[in-house]
Length: 162
Image 1 (tube, one colour):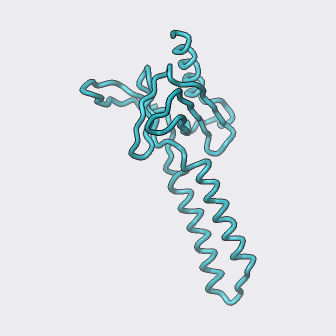
Image 2 (tube, helix red, strand yellow; image 1 turned 90 degrees about the vertical axis):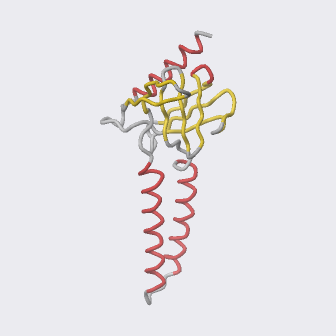
């Protein structure tokens, strides 16, 4: 995990990035997917063997790809920072600060690609009532993320302290 110092309201605090990189999932993979489909359609249009099945298949795959990316990839937060007693979420230009006491539930799907952690909040903020991120990659993809286990324990402790 990377630790860095960030100035917030004049005070400097040490924060840890607990989210994984989203460049591959949110940018590179969709560009490759739609780029290859475009090449397939161009090839089908430029050759003498114009196959209607080939064109329809490419269009169906583009629709499937768009639906897949919209529901499982493009909703991922760009960065999650752990500031000790709260988390800071960044998704695009929007930022939201959430204390552990405000977290209702943490859902973790570790057998999905990409892995998804969904954090549900008590009240909506700049990013809504929930936020989804992917934890950093681990050597053993079948093991549970230690970051998620730590977050769940800290949320339980914060709720118990109320």
